[in-house]
Length: 116
Length: 166
Image (tube, rainbow over all chains, first blue to last red; front, side):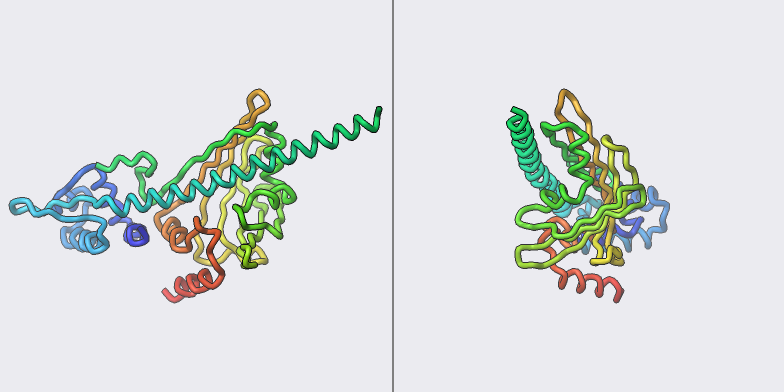
């Protein structure tokens, strides 16, 4: 996932990945949608390919690029664990609120006792 | 193709939302999120503690705290408040800092929005966490922000040196 994010800090590469989320594309289609020169697009695709973010399937005389699933699953798992941190924090807060309320209850009982 | 619902369509701008309902009025909930004596008691995940926590509750004000591991390793964080609407809303950006609340250069920030809504004596707290860029996420991942808590200073120092060497 680190490789994924590092590769995506370059705006054109980020754009390529976003295009590929909608489905496979040829180099020609990617080049056209990005408004780049083909050598530039190929250079970015090479980086993405080496980082195992995309894979290429030759089809007749065309090269079709698709996203690989794994780096995205890792990203999702990481976000999920950050989320879990918040869940744990909320658990602890829940206990703390109960504790606060118990203390408050105890204090007000004592005041009532004193009044009697 | 990729239809992971929890992943943002813009990969570099990931975010998530966590919500919980508490049986307490929201004025109290707002206090436990904004007063050091309360935060020290619950903010750190077990078994971490918060020996130091200072808060300047105003837009642009700083919330600075230290999280201590059972081994005695300290990790400081600093948040800057953006919006404060008691007892409804709180937004702040967070990053790692030193013990004087100077942010550590090269560290990413993430934005947290807390919304408190009260109904029939119960308060829902919604935490919305956003990473602004792939770069921010990348650094966050690097330093293991999540296991965040297990991050050591050695690792952090090494990481910052590496950043500066680039």
